[in-house]
Image (tube, rainbow, N blue to C red; front, side):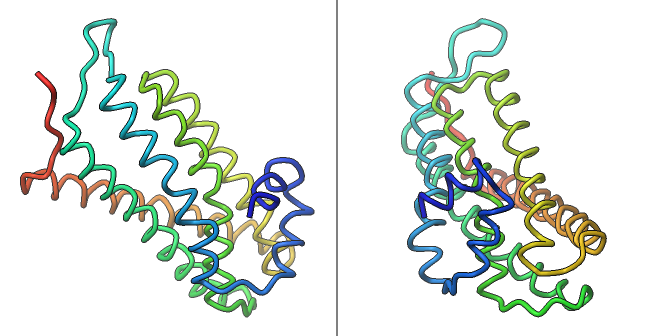
Length: 199
């Protein structure tokens, strides 16, 4: 796992070829990669929100209670786990349009490795400052998109022009999934599971 994570940052084109050559099961992928890396933003956010706090405009830091922050961290963790599976399922479904025949497991593996920069970027939650979050978040999203556009044609073994269209479709679906997660969060918060601030 660590070799692939490092390889995706150091030499992504070559690493995608290596990943494609492996036979990975969904359960093994989750146990060795997704469950661990998806915990980075959840744990970092919990520590940052309860110990450091958000400071808006140089005022007093605003912190969350540990109980409410734990609920939010668990929900965000579960949302990330589900998000990888949903994106993998969409990639598998869309692959038929581009004459690619990957298995569902291969598509979920691809989605998990593509999301790696987002997971690692979650370390910014340790220091919850608006500019740190924006800078790291933007860099993570940009590199995730780069991995998607570089990796999809190689991983699916399709021409680069079809890979571009396929990647653009996956990116659009990813944005829809993100909006759905945000909408679900708002609904859950409205049901009384929102953040509780330390007074």
